[in-house]
Image (cartoon, rainbow, N blue to C red; front, side, top):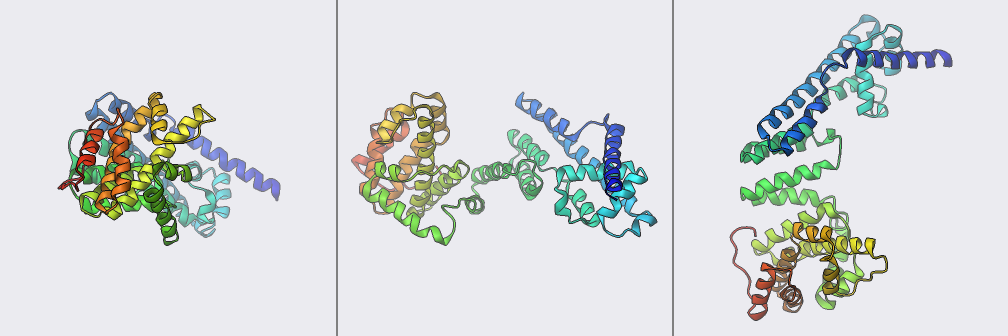
Length: 372
């Protein structure tokens, strides 16, 4: 019996190989996507868009064909008598050389764990139908429209890609899609929807989300306010780079809308994540480094181009300035002055150093109508 099963499995595998060999001359959908990315990087956005649309169309056509191949197989009277069991259907495919159906199932098992189908042919058919979605192509179509200034169309494409996130080949890419949606919502000043999307990202921040962390956040804030920046960064480290920008944008939004206490909490997390990343990179190159002060950390960071780029990209000095401004707006002048004092003495802080100096001379709550 075992030999028969092994032979059946071998024949089933060979059916898949034969099916692939028969169709290997077809253009793979992923080839069109990669070609589109190459054109996009070269600035040829028009042809890139066509390539991304080809990729979407080719993938849909491929899985539609495979779906139909499996339907055709399941419609055979002999197969219908086997019921819904893949364990019964697979030997039939192998024994009768149902090459196309074998190819469809082999492709499905490559994309989806066989165990998730629970041995059901019906679920296999449903899964093939879902694979027609190509969120990566939807995303890159959105990118093509974005660079051409068609923000409404781009937003629609990003939202479509996010709706299909369950089928991403790289599951973590859904965060990138969400941030693209947020960028356009910010430009369009649709702040209510932007806030909603940012909070969705922060659901993945285990230190931030959940009632259980209220006490932890309260203690963190007290240490920052009462014991100062150096003590705060000595006690706490938190490297969760994917949520840093969400905290930063929410903090700026809440400051803009006058909710200073909420702005403080989010900007505090952004500040903590940014400095954790900087500290860990310094330690990676200087294993005996021990954090003492922000001034000392920045002196070392400015010697490393990778950290200079990170500090600029993460709007480090801007984050510090508005954390100080939010603390002041929440009635916490002493900790606010600590941030402004650091910035005013930091030669690399640029605009934010100058604005911090003004705040030190005569502190005030900024009246802003748009997000900074």
